[in-house]
Length: 163
Figure 1 (cartoon, rainbow, N blue to C red):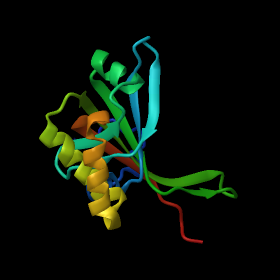
Figure 2: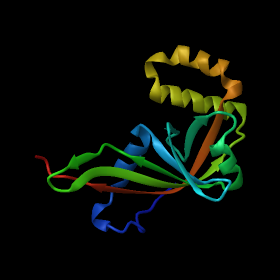
Figure 3: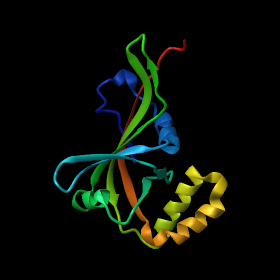
């Protein structure tokens, strides 16, 4: 997993790698961008979890446009935007964001799928682990996991002065 900001046009707005990793860890959702089976671009917001190494996991139904898109084109992009702050009188917005180049994989083995569900529970339902695990086991047969293998990511930010 390489942090590479060389292609960021505004070099004065680079997000330090430590802040990019923090956003990857704590972001509420991301936008998964793919090429749909009909050849058109397709992006969709999704919940996700990062394994603190080089994988992002997303859960979904066992069929649908995301999966058929990935079957045809495994190279995808994932974007996470942190808290934004609009400054209407300055005609600008403060933000932090990262863009991640990934290859997407489906058809994971059962152990990795369950690990992903446990990580998702830890992130989104930390106070409901026991009930969540029972729910995950009960609905396991109708849940697919997409694994995004991170190859490279970059980060950008615009910091606004404190009022």
